[in-house]
Length: 373
Length: 119
Image (cartoon, helix red, strand yellow):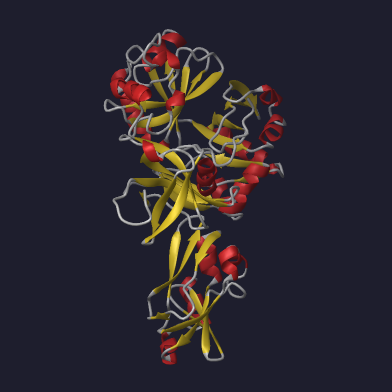
């Protein structure tokens, strides 16, 4: 086994009393002394600070932003060329079978395109980019940390260090200076709350984290609460809710495929798996990602088989993420069901410890998003 | 009071044994969000799965530490599972068991031995 990598905030995590675990090849904080429940609730009530430096940051450069964007559109079913300077959007790399290789954030940072990809996929993503993009320089950013500040107080906290962030709207990106270091700030996150993701040079990362934590409104938050927050927000975790065998239509991510890339769009198709994906947009997919609200308090965790009836029959689907929602005050799951069972309000059963327990298909997100539009 | 390697504590009370989990176990499990208790009157054998606990992280089982009959369960935990984190060694006991053979308790650790084990 290879040694685990550490982020620039490793020493700070230990100092803060974090419990560290292996995640995507990194040693990461799963929780701090406050615990998952308090960290989760604090993020929704005030602000939480997350170290997401394990994620992959990549810069793509070429003749112009547009040239790079059009090249990347051969790999993602997203309108990259139409993204305005200073704006970011969600997207994904697809494969030839119409499945998802990874999901990512894409930002138009003026003269270049900036990507943030999943930690576990970043080496594959880089190889994929190198193999397919011509006349594009691919620069993995390996000397910057990535911090996320999330929650209703995030704007007040961060604007004390960088007043200009207060004017940003959801999915805006800017370059600014924070504590003397060049920071690439986006107004986005993975919690359903308003907040920011801040890319800073490694050398300045700890100073920034300490400055943010000095504010009483900010608690450090680990991967445990990051997971329950994103699940309440109905957001997918790559490798669990979506993977190479899942199409974006099955995953209920059709909203991320803009009209210009769909059939009859000006730049329709032209991405891996387009035939299947565009056909599914028209005709529907056989299964769909849904939210599930189990009755009672028992969480239905990842891998729980789902049934159409209380007795008999074969499983019709499976839970891909499940936990107790601290803000929801109840268990919640996401999973896949045949399209005919995917309507909100449909009753299904999940088998937990040999017993079939009822659950109801529910709208996502479980907890309403509070982005600053 | 006796302790098991599974981080349960066993406290004799009249002719029954009260069973809970240790502070160390509660801390390791993290915030507990769900507790499923056995039915009163169930006859259990040592190592039978008796209680299910779900924390924010994962599900865990509590095994019957001895043979016997479940004579009382702590129903407060069903609506308030977080009590296990707040007072694991006191009010947040799980069940009371009437031992079939009280000598089975002799196999378990003293408090000092348990503390040695977790240190």
